[in-house]
Image (cartoon, rainbow, N blue to C red; front, side, top):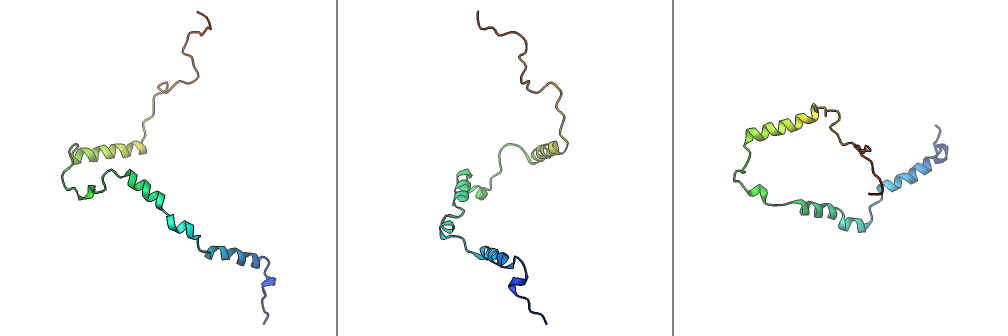
Length: 103
């Protein structure tokens, strides 16, 4: 039976050295504050952290109207309405008239 040595497979030593980077642990300074910025941003964007404890009905739109409004919003992305030509912002046209430096 023929023995296989590391030198017989070209590039194998480089591959093995490269794979050692996959098992390296992250530096300790990263673990101490990892995720802190995300948690701080979530906390700053939460208006009422106890909102799930409030069981009172929400004033305003009722369930059927809200459902219809949401369906209309979602369908507007599936079947967008074409904008009429000429209704957009006109860039680069002066709209007539002349600009002279004097009075």
